[in-house]
Length: 456
Image 1 (tube, one colour):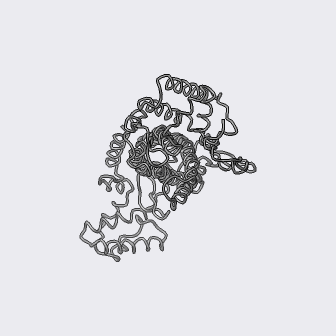
Image 2: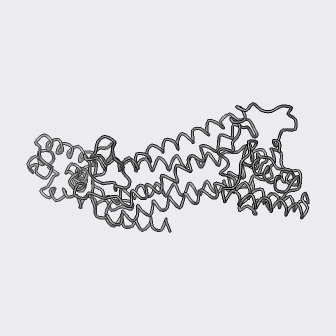
Image 3: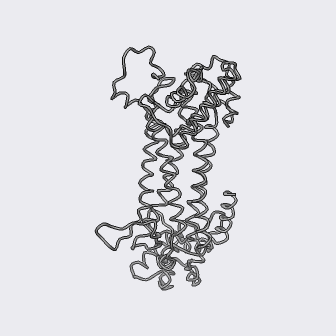
């Protein structure tokens, strides 16, 4: 079989250009959805009277056989298979003869590929959401098991205030929850069917687009035939979602890499998620987390790639748009690896509760002392300054705040009472943060309940 478009050409394409141009190397993964789309389109042609009943049955039977060949890895590519659409049509002609040529009536590879990718995303994104939910489940289970563990919370990587470990982990849960919401929102726009838009101007054979959309499981149809084949916003949205999600996974990975160092020693990554050194026998490197951190950069790069590709394209279809699939497939593949690995890391993570507690210092209770002075009538700015003076003196004298003499506090501000020492308690500090979303025990338990509801 010759190329789908070879009639007006006298010679052959340069072999180097052909290799450069052909997309079968990466779009072959669309085979299943491409065949699904073709079967639905064949039925639509039958409804429109373009295909006879016999022709329709021959085409559907041939396509079903091709689908079986792909599933059983028996499909054989041909050097002239430019893309997945060409490969399927070429094989269909081998199976049923010239009637295969009627399948493309009124259809273009432009609306065909747009349909294929949307169908592919409608399959793949729910599966990725399942992996994302599994990671959230692992976070909830770990947070529930360690509800009472206290640790330093940080701003600017400097110890700031005491928090519960569970509260820290739930912060990432809610990041991932927003990622799930963004995914659902993107799917609303993905689930619009472009099939029947033709090359750019629409279909001239009476094909019922709304029927096609229902047949393929879409929620509706795209509204403009030109925009239908030119649009890649839905892929950009997925790549944006992937980049944002990757950023969240990377931040979590970075915290755990840092905390697994000997200097912090807050956590220990399970052996099965670490590797050794080829030269230093003692090493246990958190490669699983470092790879997640590194692959997040690829996700950002893939988004940037497609944003740049589409920024100056004229309507409608341009072959530049062939560059949409490799970054998309790469991002989906990366996330399909990252999410289950990180879920495993969280599930098997060992906490060093003693080391976390030891990392707390009384300086982290400075805000509690300021709040104490506010309750005794001092404006917050004056209270802030007074406690800052107390912290300075404790550092200069080399003693914690609880051992700074009362006379020193009184010299700073007469608002200090002898009961100030009762404020210097880590558990009391976290329990004081009892507002919704805070780190007090009841607030964290309520947060866990809301998180379980969100997953349900």
